[in-house]
Image 1 (cartoon, helix red, strand yellow):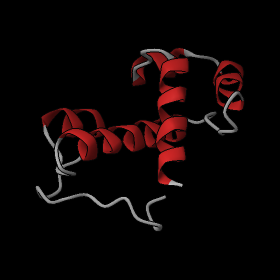
Image 2 (spheres, helix red, strand yellow; image 1 turned 90 degrees about the horizontal axis):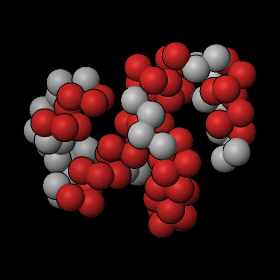
Image 3 (cartoon, rainbow, N blue to C red; image 1 turned 30 degrees about the horizontal axis):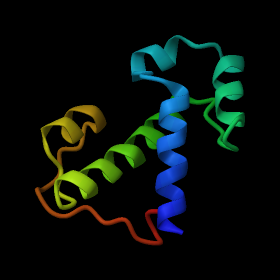
Image 4 (cartoon, rainbow, N blue to C red; image 1 turned 90 degrees about the vertical axis):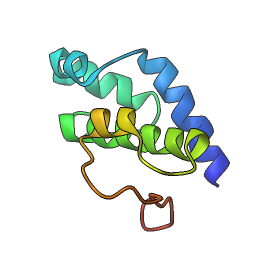
Length: 93
């Protein structure tokens, strides 16, 4: 299941392009909805997109930094918690 989630996440990131939070906010509600529908996601609200980005970045820290938040993760997600391994468990998913 985890591998499917990662593959889907990567696919969505490439489809959305290099959208930043600022670029995302500029899209109309209809454009956000259309992009999300391609993958069965409800991305109409900025908070939905922010959650999506956080999931992808958490995947990156698990792949490249043993699950610990690094500067890029902190900058992108505004995470200010301790430097501990961030879980990807059933509750998180």
